[in-house]
Amino acid sequence: MSKKKLKIITIIIIILILLIGLPLSIYASLLRPVNKKDSTLITFDIPYKTSSNEVLNSLEAQGLIKSSLIAKIYMKTHQITNIQAGTYILSKDMDLKTILNKFTTGKVLDDEITITFIEGKRLSYYVNLITKNFSYTASEINDVLNDKEFLKELIDKYWFITDEILNKDIYYPLEGYIFPDTYNFKKDATIKEIILTLIEGLNTKLEPYKDTILNSGYTPHEILTLASIVELEGVDDSSRSKVASVFYNRLKSGWTLGSDVTTYYAFKKDFSSELTLEEYNKCNPYNTRSACVKGLPVGPICASGLESLKATINPETTEYYYFVADKNKNTYYAKTDSEFNAIITDLKNKNLWYTYN
Image 1 (cartoon, rainbow, N blue to C red):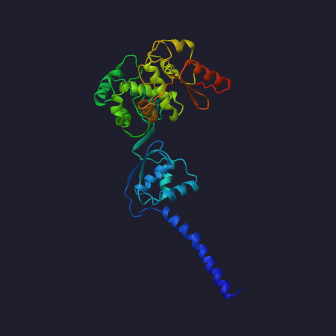
Image 2: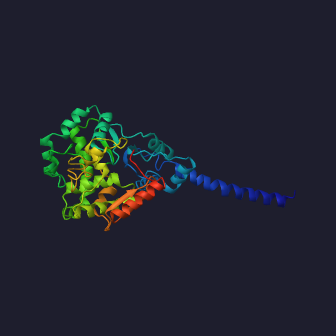
Image 3: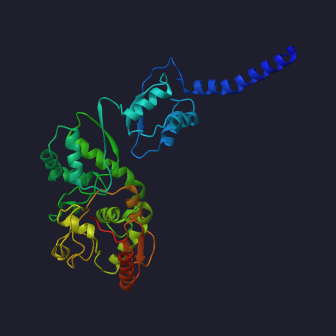
């Protein structure tokens, strides 16, 4: 081989090394700590349902990683998907691998307890959740939740809590008054502090809609009550606003709401149980399937998520009075009883009829 050819081959090899090695070198450098000498502790919050892209963008914005784009590539190539909500203690001397390891193992702030409250659950479910994370018993928590003096304090403090919660027919005064989200509590938090944190969560979400709610013609309690029904009747977020419109149309026309989920709540049954014809027709302040309750039930039946709240506060305008969902989570709407019955017959014929249990 001539010296000239050898020189050309050598140059090509060097170029290839640079083309491959330089990007890898840059990639590796962007995975390293932002500042190895800065060990200042920084609190970093990941709320419930935050996407990995949002987390990485926030890390870059706070100067905790060098590049969110490179971090996304790293997560994809290493198949990292299980970032956990919570409050974390980070610093700029941590590399990307260390930070992501904290997120995936849930190594949150040691002196706090992180609890995720999911939407659509009854207050009794949340009470049980609190007992699993604190040393309090369900009886102790319920004593506070039903304490008249505490309830009056809440009525005085929050614009959306009124004396409607003191109605003797209501099962649990604060049902529907906590906002489902991920919260951080001090390990030594009192029961009242825990409850106030959950109610404050709802306050934060409702505040932007305060004027709309107060001028809606419905009380905040009624809005929360209807939102809780929409939460359980809507099969997904896209259907909730139209579902809310159906209930508003029925309310304005003086009809019963005819909502099965209120009957389940009225007789304290879960959705795995079957309702009897007697229960459907039995008078109960929560049972909107009975002829006894023409308007809204006496109070909320679960905790509503943000989409259900928004759908109830700003519903679509429709002429529908009926809706039904099939087993594939498709929702069908009807203006008349005959249209509605025809939809049901069609769904049953196609084996698409949906039942709660």
